[in-house]
Length: 219
Image 1 (tube, rainbow, N blue to C red):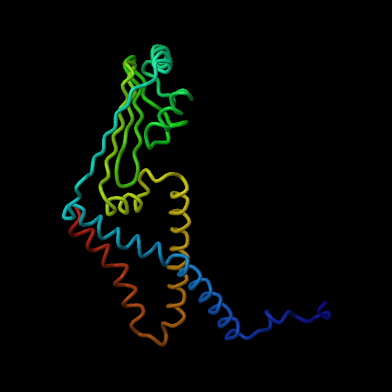
Image 2: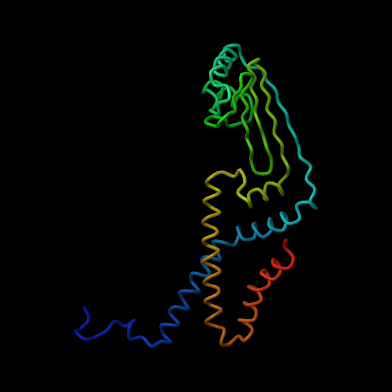
């Protein structure tokens, strides 16, 4: 309990001390956000380059196809289900999903399928490739997967394409950490600008250059 009429040490601290305290806090937030961003920033920078030169980086897709035949009991099941769900977009019945997962390297339980009177088609897109499963009412099942290589995989991860919600949350958190990193870095530069005359010209160049390039060369 402070005596009446006294003030807290923080309020009585000279401006220079408060400035030093705030600067130390900025440095702490800056290095923490830098540490969190390090690996992801490198990956996103590398994939930014590969995306920018996607047409010059050759990718040879590797396509794998597998076929199988439904057991008679399941053939009856898919015939009945297809007849009642033509043009619907609903998951495979549990017995069909279990059979598909035991027969092919897929996870289709709960995944929506496009139904017609002839078949059920399950699209299974993924980063760096594609896949699909088709099960016909005639009992013939086909599974095809396409692998476009690790560069395509990294590019799709950069965009969050078919990467699932968890990766999407990571990108959001990473974006927030990058904002903290940039804002704290700017404030640190501001504090040191008096002793570094080139600070503001370099910051101005970093702001103006992309704007000028976009206005002049992007149409």
